[in-house]
Length: 261
Image 1 (cartoon, rainbow, N blue to C red):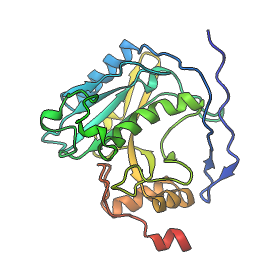
Image 2 (tube, helix red, strand yellow; image 1 turned 120 degrees about the horizontal axis):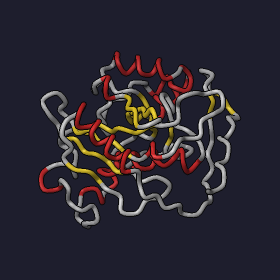
Image 3 (cartoon, rainbow, N blue to C red; image 1 turned 90 degrees about the vertical axis):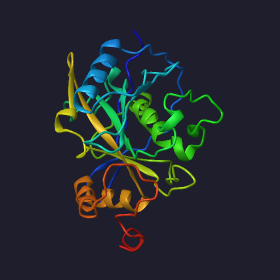
Image 4 (cartoon, rainbow, N blue to C red; image 1 turned 135 degrees about the vertical axis):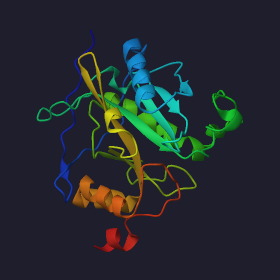
């Protein structure tokens, strides 16, 4: 048995909408090897194929720290003309939730990518990412996969939790995810493009929620902090912004609003 996890950090700030803001420092700890949970991996794989379609391949980890994070890749199909990437492994261990929050201990993550995304098409499918010519060696193409895996470990590395409406910036101040985009933050949200039955899964005594990665511009993150996640999602709905990652999509919040309001 290892040491008990540290308590989640206390929020020392609150946004205008009243939501707590947590600031996490880099954690100094030794590598903790994770072997993976075969029951969980199988259950997530079956859940994905039941509700989303055939898994084309799985991005398997060779060596894992804290939790073993695989990524299931579902190709575009008649009902969903985009790739759907789903993690298995984040829910291998419970997240450290605040004492006043119930039932928010287990989650997995989803990212939706357009059908022409480099690394997912043609001869790149299933090609070893260690290949120096693989498109994912370029951060412009790899950052959504990197953030799936990073966020799946984040709550376990920081003894914290990730749930609906949580936003995670790429640094402080937030920096763009790659050279060809100004997106710089992730919000977790339900995905209206995926079946409702897919959004949760019961595995043993675990109720696992599936949250999608919704990349944001800095102004959109500020809008969410000031008005809340529901207000931002309503704004996205009015502007027909969907959770398919597009590094060049128009911003839902104009710079004038978030800088001078």
